[in-house]
Image (tube, rainbow, N blue to C red):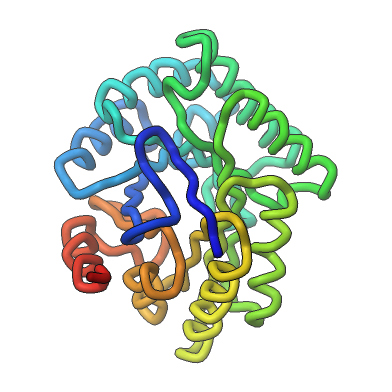
Length: 264
């Protein structure tokens, strides 16, 4: 049975799926504006999709401290995930593993410069599990853990839905690599693909010792974003305004829909 993970004051892996809302601003002002809007809606955890940030796309990390300090002031006690999604996995950032690792570690350095520990500003980091070979990614996860950072290992397929066994194998690999939470997102081409994703989610939830996050994207996969409490996905992504992935539901409607699935 999947375990639980605490990120700041939030427990993932028990109760209803928690709601994560992404920030996709391209400028500092857009990032702060989105954050101020997000806190007006039902939200358990926020994801800063840093791959959307124009300064990062241009190779500059100069505003990192300002952004993270500003986000922490706006979000207060709401946990924050740092995500740098590459284009190969549906994101906005074109970079190789060396550049990817450099950005993640420099972000941690900037956090520690401000507060002596990264967890004061960022609570978790997303790591694309297939960004590099096993040894390199394992080393990156270990390094992040050494800086007291929770790690969400992720894999995204925007073209298809692999088999149930393949999905389970990917989640199992993330577990073996030492991540705290295991995440896969896939694109369905037919209703049967959504059932495949849900079956793999249940299998992972019942077998792996870590919480899992899964979703079938697009309108066809909408049920997977709402039924995590039944099938075992601990987190679901909504949106306020611009979505960061196909099929995300507006935060208020998502919160209302999730309440229908709550077990008595």
